[in-house]
Image 1 (spheres, rainbow, N blue to C red):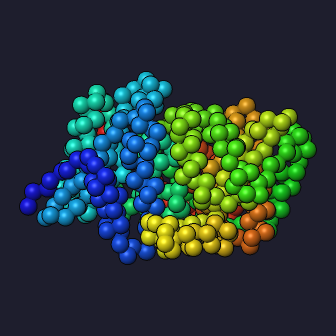
Image 2: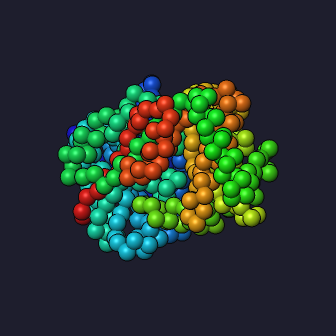
Length: 373
């Protein structure tokens, strides 16, 4: 039976698009489901402010009367203007183990991107660097953090067969936090604080933390400006992501540092929500909130290091060491043992060298692919 491609045009179509991975990965031991409401908001022009400067379309593949795959295509005009190129993105690709399904999905996404004047496609990438990005190509027997992704092993081989080649990889690490690491980081932190007069800011609750959300994104815009796939966060985007993540943050694991009354850096850690999200099954209500709250309060053994940023002009001070030490001290107080890093570009040798100072494993790898159109 022929494969039919249907464009997602309304709320009912978006629900089918969001629900498909829940069917594809049902019962899978390592897939961590997102919150369905967040995913629906992310792909709707009415709720996601990235549509102020992005265009996007989404499609479903139907085979034998059932959904067999999905794909999105994105043109981020701000990013293209920044780099001076015409590059489109494919996004949120999921599919059954069938090459023909994948070919039809890529064909419709590539065709639409060509109509928009794009000369190359990259992906999987989201609207921004806080959106879903990369395809898992190593580490299929490890649970991802909620800031990462999971895919089935056959994805990589079938993508290879469709004319795509590697653009760049992210690598992820699992660190074991021992007494030696905590003591060494704490000693280095105190030296740097005295040398540069850097102060640490702590937060007691979300309301105390909320006014600093714009500052975090301003630092991100500065610190990440030269990275691939990154465009600046607008005020509307800051509000969108602050609302999305604020409800999941434990203020004890959010730290900021300032020098001469200027905030120069931050770190956002999050007690691992992966198991809680699996129990929540895509919804906070009616019972998902109970599982999430227990994890958010720190009743887990693993911390996900979600975001770290230091203004470029202050990166040489060692402010990042202070932020890491503060996170580790909070972990020690909670009896937490492991840190899951988010994806680091494989070319970021300084950060990778830092993680190798810990008892660690490099256990996951994600890939961005590319193809000329």
